[in-house]
Image (cartoon, rainbow, N blue to C red; front, top):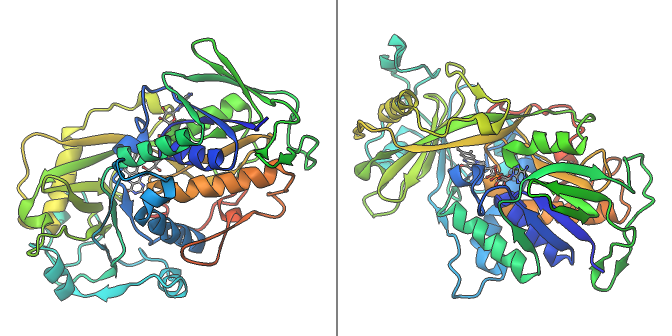
Length: 456
Ligand SMILES: Cc1cc2nc3c(=O)[nH]c(=O)nc-3n(C[C@H](O)[C@H](O)[C@H](O)COP(=O)(O)OP(=O)(O)OC[C@H]3O[C@@H](n4cnc5c(N)ncnc54)[C@H](O)[C@@H]3O)c2cc1C
């Protein structure tokens, strides 16, 4: 009998993890309280692919994942009749301001063979139609008189030609769902988890009395189910392995499971808005290709071309903006606020001079699952059999195909007796070479020294 795994959450992470586990022979059930895939934070994502992170392992993970996105059809085993999400390679320009780009980034890029270039104002002017090439910082709100200050200093940027975005994040999630189903996984929607109880394999004490033996068909459930999962409709599911992939609801699920007291980093939901502006002359270059994505922390935004000749504008958590931390993600108002739209639109118009601001606010609302160091937790928990892919901090969509693979490797190793806390699992990076030390994403870490914002 194959080992049973229940994945909580059918966002991009849960779907990818379900696929990778099912491929390894687990009997996977995915439960989600929404009515279909990608209706949590994945449905609001900007889906930008970039490599500028504070930690070398985060950079290496994003670089490897980019290669998987480029080969998504092959990765998920989709035939030609299935539409598959595209990686749109636009390049990414990170406009430099003091203290933004950690010192390690350029040396890590060199070591990992990630192509990059130093752009000056002339490069920005050539690649971004109608761009204002002055450097603007620190970020201020539009009602601050300093917002109108002129700046003489020309902007420079760190440019990576392999940056870009995923054309359709919902389709990408569906691609993982279909792939998981091809390997026998089942998906149960409108299925809210309201209770999580462990039995046989109680709590993690360093010993593994119930290690799963392996037969030629993959892992087996010799020790029997250790977890019961209680659903709001009265159903009870059982499995040896439970994975928390509940996005911004992750802390609630950990609470239900009674895990997390050993965490070195905390998890808090943060409401976010991403806006869209009509911007035909801004987002398309003379040759018809979309402009590079831009991280413009000096004015407090990131921006990229969006389908329909629009500019998509998100925030980079500048200190002048009040952040909307939530007790419960379900408390988030899901309507775009006109004042937030106007703030971000005016900021975008400061960088791109051709932008006209419409009267009606347009955009989406989503919630980040923010960890205290804006770096995810990809790990086990203090209870045997309970795993977590959480704390994705607004910056992990890009890693989803790899998160499936690394969580499956970690779960498989731990279920077969490996002490991941003492000797972190390492995952081989098939496309880019080298190894990823999953200890970087341990729940037990002291918060890492990172940007302290969505850059990670
Ligand atoms: C506005 C926004 C912009 C972003 N931009 C980028 C970007 O440009 N680049 C990038 O790399 N990343 C970005 N991210 C981050 C990225 O989108 C997320 O890290 C990723 O989508 C998280 O996926 P997930 O599957 O973990 O969570 P989710 O998509 O939130 O899925 C979690 C699922 O769990 C389900 N669930 C929760 N509780 C329960 C329960 N009790 N029972 C059953 N089901 C439950 C929910 O219904 C939900 O479907 C952005 C995120 C947001 C919100």
